[in-house]
Length: 80
Image 1 (cartoon, helix red, strand yellow):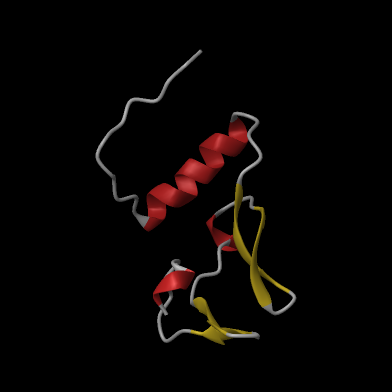
Image 2 (image 1 turned 30 degrees about the vertical axis):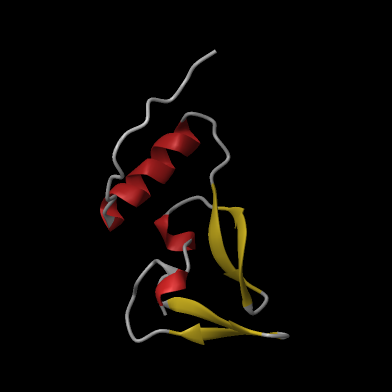
């Protein structure tokens, strides 16, 4: 059984994310990530950086969900 050594968090830049997706897909992995579909951010198979919800965020309140365009092109939908 393989174990993963615990390491300090690493920041992965935008260009590296695209390359990581390509490498994993090239190795036969199904890469899952956030995508915009049917007015929501959901998790589904992605083929590259272009599939990620750049510039989108979601707002959630009790009984309410809304997809909202950001003023930037950030990839992290949780920092809106």
